[in-house]
Image 1 (spheres, one colour):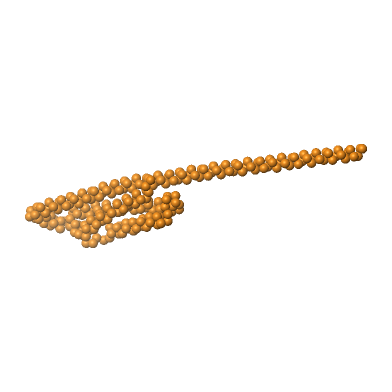
Image 2 (tube, rainbow, N blue to C red):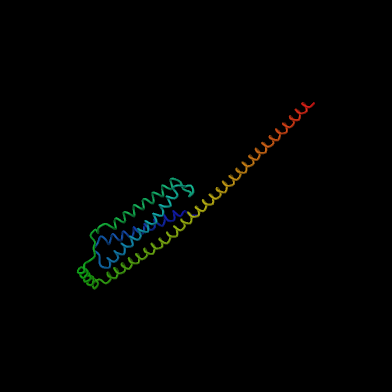
Length: 241
């Protein structure tokens, strides 16, 4: 059976790489003066980044919990101190990287802002003039915008698939831990039965010893009585003869 930690770790790495690509596109829009359409894309990217970072943080928290559980009895999970330390370093590094990306999202804009209405009107007029002069350039820009939107939709689908895979992997981790707990419970039951049998054997031995001592005491008393009677008879014979 594959290690659930490694499966979730791969999912985290994949999700983190996608988030970094999305952050790079977000920074490009953040640093420039945006059209109304680009402003919508900017807001969409911002929401997607926050959601992705939240999902990654949740996965990292789950991985940290598995490390904490395995730290007490690493041999039960086929681990040693070196492997636990390696996993702890991975989780800590990713937590730090997620915090850095969140700070980048929370930072003040570097100068980019949406066009005002007047600027948008002027930009539309300029675009219209340019479209009359250079229709091929407008068509190319439209194609690029479509490609960017398709890329965003693809990233969103990949993120959803990643979340679904993470949920399945966490379910596998929970099943593994439950199986381990069941095994421990069976072992405890066997130990309890062994203790009960040992206690019963000890009590039986004690009863036998007590019976033996009691029987031995009765035999001694009988012998003493018989000897006393014999001595008494001998004394009587000596007296009357």
